[in-house]
Length: 130
View: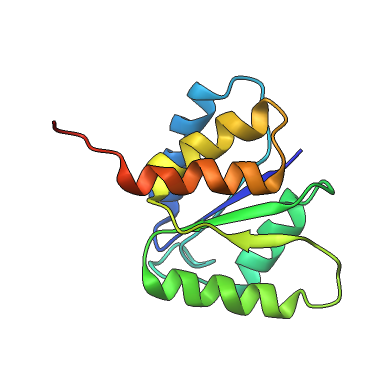
């Protein structure tokens, strides 16, 4: 099963996105959050992200979603810190809410890492108003 890590500067945002995605992907339990700092303040922490990636890894890869550029930088640092652990982890270039929802649905039906990322990145072009 492909795992998902949500990186947000806010723990509340990360948990809210997870809650929403799990409504769409019943029975899927591969979403892990790395939101905010350990003391509850706003920010991102590469060590917390690294731990979430390890937790999400069930052998089929992990896709990471970030809310802002500095969250992506922290995720890249976390991935660098995992060097040599053999975890296949990639960062999706997708909107965090829509991307996580699509990724969770794809992962829940057994799609591989490439498909999960491909489908989640299609959400960049989703139009909300026609």
